[in-house]
Image (cartoon, rainbow, N blue to C red; front, side, top):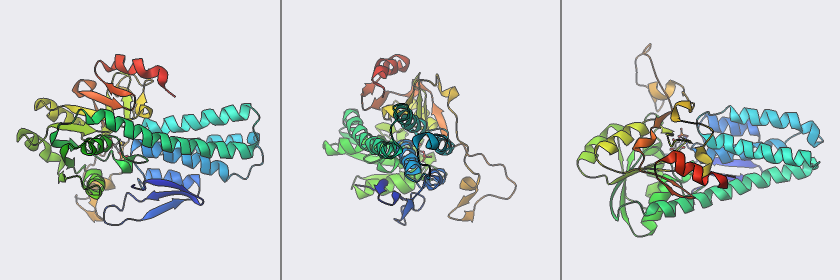
Amino acid sequence: MIPTLAWTPEGVRFIDQTKLPLEESYVLATNYEQVADAIVTMVVRGAPAIGVSAAYGIALGALGTKTATAAEFAPEFAAICERLAATRPTAVNLFWAIDRMKRLFETLLAAGAPLAEIKQKLLAEAHAMYEEDIAACKTMGAFGAALLPQDGGVLTHCNAGALATCGYGTALGVIRSAVEQGKHIHVYADETRPFLQGARLTAWELIADKIPTTVICDNMAASLMKAGRIQAVVVGADRIAANGDTANKIGTYNVAILAREHGIPFYVAAPWSTIDLATVTGEDIPIEERPAVEVTHHGGKQLTPNGVGICNPAFDVTPAKYIAAIITERGVLRAPYSESLRQLEPLKK
Ligand code: MRU
């Protein structure tokens, strides 16, 4: 299994996703600040992976406290949560995970639990999220596999794979599951400028699994669709609003429009922790603006002239009308999403 993140006796170990695919190296975070840095610098990235990483960051913060009682620790706990919440704004899984840890802490505090017990329970909660994430990916994979063709090309954008989760992946989980069922899928991975999650990460993990994969530049998708080489699109999500509008990696919206124009189904695969019913539409989703250097430079080399304007939004929002189905671990949802999402809400943890 791809070791995206793992708990060790020393702290959380991340495979360094800024170095893949040329170098397989690891970063060990021994305190919560280092976990926050790993999220900001994208050593670890992908909505479900950053959520679980933040949960482990909170556990590390609790384990490392110098306070002696739960009441003394409470303000420090709040500061730890605040630091981790300030890392990346778009993926709601981050806030979902932090809220879940906060709820647990508050319940234990109110019950008068000793600090030693709180530390162990926070760590156990992070472990539970880790396991649940893998299980959710496997379940949504099985649901989504039925939507993919028996034989054909499937386009994906960014990396919504094992590297973006605790294992198996969301969009790539659907593809993995289809392949395990004996379907002959050829994956087309958009390179995904500027961070190249598709060219570097999706390609790396699919090749490791021996799933036939071709990397294309982002601007090649329309031409391949027109040539009949793509039968379905499946992508992940960072936040799905109550009406089904979906934030995902910048460029996803382009792909959705192209798919519609060519009559190709465009699917979104995401765990329930990505669904944000408190956000009414995509207009309300905060979009992260990343440093200009990701666009101006590549491999340490400057590509653009000094003084030019640079725009680097990390995500865009695909309107729900372009989405053929949202694949979750609770089933495959169809439009109107404002209704299908609400119907499953009572199950929310
Ligand atoms: O900026 P990133 O690499 O964290 O963006 C990741 C994506 O957009 C993924 O598609 C999304 O988080 C889903 S991951 C299962």
